[in-house]
Length: 344
Figure (spheres, one colour):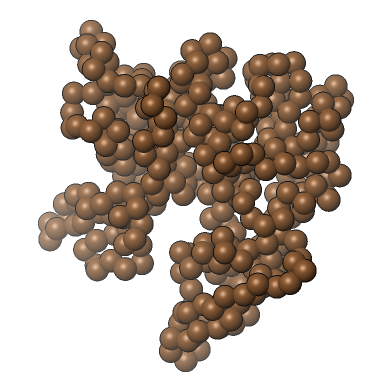
């Protein structure tokens, strides 16, 4: 009864709890929070911890903190790596969305990767409930991505969506409001960043951080050879001499760094297509494949995948926000919520 009373004063929320970024939508109002999934924790001399910053402010501290402060990414590969810190982060975002502390009890729908185990699903649900949620629903990422990309998921037609996020790549064949076939691989944005870090270290003896690698991926990264290479300068520490140096890195270097990871994504897509029922395969040939997530913005990725699977590949409008928007739509439309999400 107390929860119901609190619920009268709380707006329902949709949360895209991503490895790289967390987006929060308020029912009927749209996206109100879009910040990195990072928490900065400060420890006192007795080992007690308190939240120093969350989101963008915390991300700006990554790699720059003194010994008593740690900038932590509590989500790894799309799952909770640190239960306690994730709960703190969710609570912070709920309070920020409601613009007050305490006395809130919203219904929350959270987007999760398709491949989560029951234990991992329970961890997500428990984190949200401990942070103040009245009820928690889970919706799988391929479905949320399809809804957010504008795909008519309730119709009896086969559609295929590929969502390349920070921790996982989700591939789903959707028809009649459900996932007919899906595959989740833990190869995505973070994996690409690490591949760039390793490539620069191996080929240039230069040590760079994840943030620099991410910037290289965004600014000059490409999945296909370009007619004219683009380049940028990168500063880091020479691992042999220990001195700070600057080098020139080209788009071809970054393409070579990401090659193996992108091949894994392409192979996963081929695996799903090979298992797709013939009736739905014909629909996919006609409708094409839709790309969502931050990875969809890598130059030429649509052509790269299209050439491999011999099917048209399209980038969704506003691919970065497709999953969050789809989660929000599922919250707004109760009938869609009941079809595509479930209380765990």
